[in-house]
Image 1 (spheres, one colour):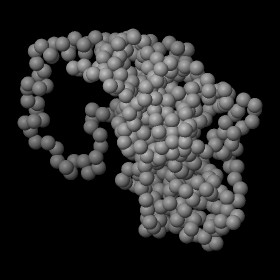
Image 2 (image 1 turned 45 degrees about the horizontal axis):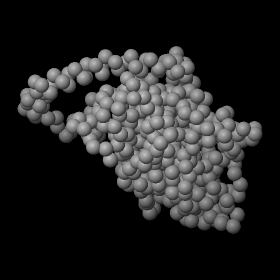
Image 3 (image 1 turned 120 degrees about the vertical axis):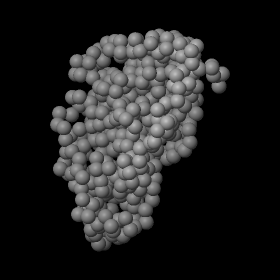
Image 4 (image 1 turned 90 degrees about the vertical axis):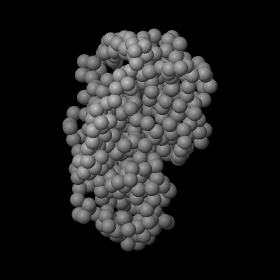
Length: 443
């Protein structure tokens, strides 16, 4: 570990707004001057003011602030807690032009501004195919039918009386990082990787419900999950997985699900692309073959180089990304910096994360912060002293099965260039001498 200087380097965060369609075209063409121009003046001002404060004393320390001399606000003013007004810029954001209908939309989680591994419920990414609903739990029902001895209909009260478990898992949309397939270098990690979140989910194991209904284990091979939204989102899930760790969940991060995350009931399918985590869950059918519904035969499939489609893609493969420093941020000082990021694998636990600052020529092993859980986000950190030279920052994750996160060259050698989904290639951030960080692809 390098010896830390007296004052660590500082990072200016990315601008919170997104870009116009013109800006997007400029980023794709490699003209990222809009990032640099936004921070040059601020960087100069901060450097000068720091020296003045060191010499004269900081009034924020020397003068007792007003809030230290007056009464605070009453508890009753906020019966449900909300973030500070000074954190209002950290929020989910939509991508202009990604979806043309407001109800069929995506909002990205601000990975660059979060700590640890748990995503606050209010910042959890969203993907809706027909908008979200706030459903009366007293009227919501879950039916289990098909190859079972007795079809049953459960109320929310029925489900919440059953033995429940709480588990921490990540959820990632199959299209996360999808724009990078087409060499579109979106500016920040919120837009490149923000269709990713991690929460503690509470519910009843699906295996308990299937056992309660008397599943026909001789014939059953798949289950079919159906949502109550206007798009009738439906997915096929293998029986092996359904009997393993799938949850029928009503809780998230210690409270009931939020409406945009499936309130009052959703499926949790650990390690599998988010579209299988059916929200507003209303029916589970047991069958002997896949259903090949619209979202399985047309969407969420991978076009391979030989012209065939990879269908029923299940696992989200081992993946990682550096969140700090990352695109749109600016390093204001040379010297010590903590490189931090997230790693995850649908196959199980993350075993190791390596970090490179020279575009993959040399690698160092990062610290994995506890807890390291199966099919959950893992936070990694590594110490780095920046000497002011240009750098390319990368992370590479390895999971407990030995799977190594591929480079773009390795991924495209197998998957080609015409895919949209399941991009788990190594992400690169280019650090310029000015301290500006931007998105770049390294092959």
